[in-house]
Length: 287
Image (tube, rainbow, N blue to C red; front, side, top):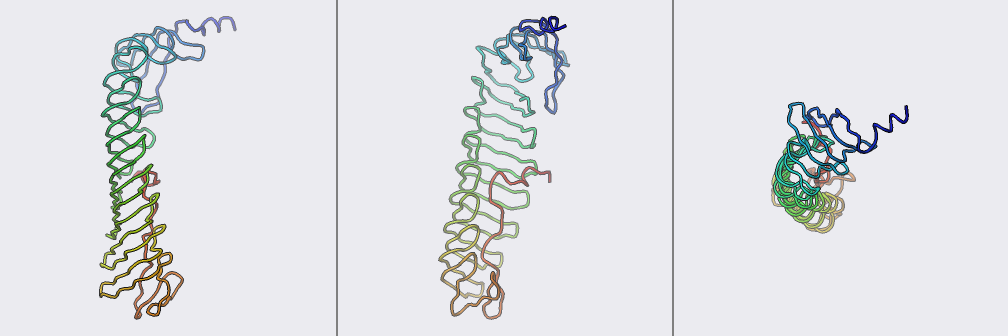
C-alpha cells in the first residue's frame, strides 16, 4: 500500500487535482500535470476552469514559468519565471489585484481589493507595495486620499471619516503626524501640529461658539503657554495644564477639570478623540 502511495506521490507523477481557491468569486479548478510530494505544482501542467478556459505551461515550485492561456491567479503569458503584463491577479487569501505585474511584483497604476476587511485601494504601486498617490476606501465608507510609502500613508493626505470628522495634512506611518487641520463632527476646528495621531505641539482651536485657544498642546489638550479668548472678548494669556487654566487672580477652579469666570462654566480645553490614523477599529466595521 505504501509503495503504491509513494508511486502516485512521486514528483513527476501525473494526476488530476480539484482545488478551491479561497476567494469570494473563485471558480473550481482542475489541474492535470506534475507536482511535488508536498502537492506544489512543479513541471508541465494544464489548468482548466469550470467555465472551460485553460492555461497550459510549466510550473517551478508553484510559480507559472512559461505558458499561455487564462490562469486564475493571473491571466496572460508567463515568461522566465515571472508574471509580466496587465490583468487580474487573485491572491490565495482572497485579495484581488487588477493592474500591471512586472518581475513578479505589482507596479504602476492598479486596483487592489482586500478580501478580509473589504477595503479597496486605487492608486500606484512600486516594488509590490503601495507607493505614490492613491486612495483607500474602508469597509465603513471612510476614505483616505494621499501619498503612500511602502504600504503606509506617509506624506500629505486627507481622510474623511464616515462620522463626519475630517483631517488634512501630513502623515507618517499611517498616523497624522506634522502640520494639519482637523474638523470634528460638531464643527470644532483645530489647525496645528500633530504627533502620532494626537494634537501635540503648537496649534489653534476654534470652537463652534467662536471661543478659541491658541498655544501649546499635548495629547489632545491645551498644555503649556497659550491664550484663551471668549466670544465676549475676555482674554486669558498664561499657562495651561491638561486643558485647564493654571491658577490666576481672575480665574478659580470649581472642579479638578473645569473652571468658572464670573459665574459662567467653561469646558476643558481639548478635543477628546482617538488617534487619527488608518488603524482605527471603526474603519473595518460595517456602517
